Image (tube, rainbow, N blue to C red):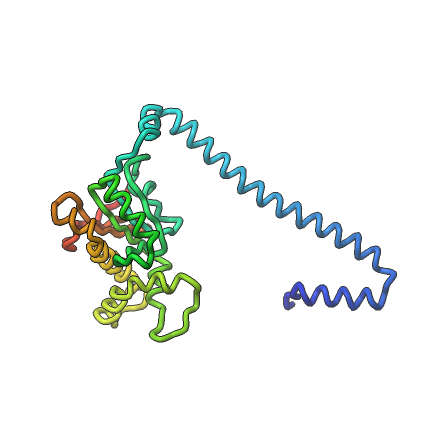
Length: 258
């Protein structure tokens, strides 16, 4: 049985009432009852979300904030993070959760596919500001760009056809920052499956971002003076592994997160 659309149902009801006006009061009563049920259902969903937020904060305050007053008193005065982390907005790859960063330890920037665009004062100023502040004001000593398995942004990048019309308002334009990675993977691994190509591109896109970081004068200057280290990483949440490599792309052995 095919599902009837909302518009079709209203049309059919209108036709029925036009033929049988005596059903009007019954229809009003049933519509009112249905409306009340829908409003109650919507209210319950909103209430569930609010309760989750409240319970989450209570857990944080009682289990963490109140148990470490020294830490939070110090953080109330200033912050001195050692790490600046670029990570994906994907809900499965929170850097603080994966790497056990404590409050005040890492300045974190998250976006679709953990991209760092090249230096440009007229574009992507949000990323530029989020990079400039921790580097020039907080004097972070490490920048880490983390890619991850099954990244929807990378899959979207690899799916974009040449000269095709955009299928999204913002996403395609953003992920095309990683086009050099896509082109290299398509050329070097054309014999692999699409999924395997995406896996390689997840890592190569990190390398593109590492290169883009050096296009920012304040980053490049500190790297050349050995005041700032830049590393890439890839978190595989399917197998529970974490690959880490230096700016010169020398990969350290993967290790399992337990």
